Image 1 (cartoon, rainbow, N blue to C red):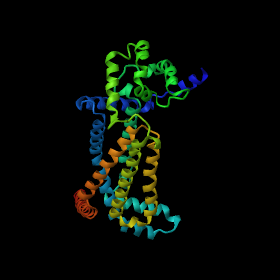
Image 2: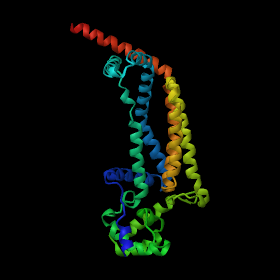
Image 3: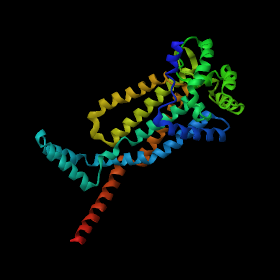
Length: 333
């Protein structure tokens, strides 16, 4: 009994601060699956492409900021040579600020906006994959009753897998719903109505891709499902390599930083490869699609905003803007 209570205390319905995001993403997935005839993975693909398109203006702005920073590198290096002594750090910083003010440039605009957006989006995706009964299927008051539901189904779970901890409660209900269906309908008739049970069964069917159960966690012993961690690694490496090549072309002076960039380029894909064994295969599927879309997006931005042309365009814009400011100053005087 103590072991059951210990496990029960670990039930999670997600990170509270992301609950509105889970709800919003859940409603979007519910709508897409309704339109697409319960095609769960097609809904994930469309969802990913749409959010990447929303992210496109931020990526373009980041590309322009990188080009502007590259154009200013000679002036920045000149100032740095002027003040090599650490004691003159304040003077160096002041001249750098003056340079940025004259050029109308804010290097902080390169920022982490796109990366933060992707992380937030990933949390939303993980939320609807881990907690589909509450947020996609929309069983009312599921979270408020999750402890009571757990206590009812845990004895059945023990019969299925033994005295083990349920790591992801809603996924377990989804995976073995037929084993829990009768007791859930009997114990919680207002929550698990016949309509909701049919919706769960349909959702469960939609979570199969080419006969693979995408609520399962990949394992070396599971054969073909290993393709998802492998594709996560390959597509992530591809995205990192292309990103590094583009950054080098945008800023040739950053050659000295290539060693650390290469380390990061290798570290992140292998980290995602490792994590893909710790999450359901559906999360890995999202990462694969996201990486593929990112590759095409990076190539598109690079082709549309090549470094030299972007720098030349920015130089013209800065010249026009500077002359305009000078004219305004003359008029005031």
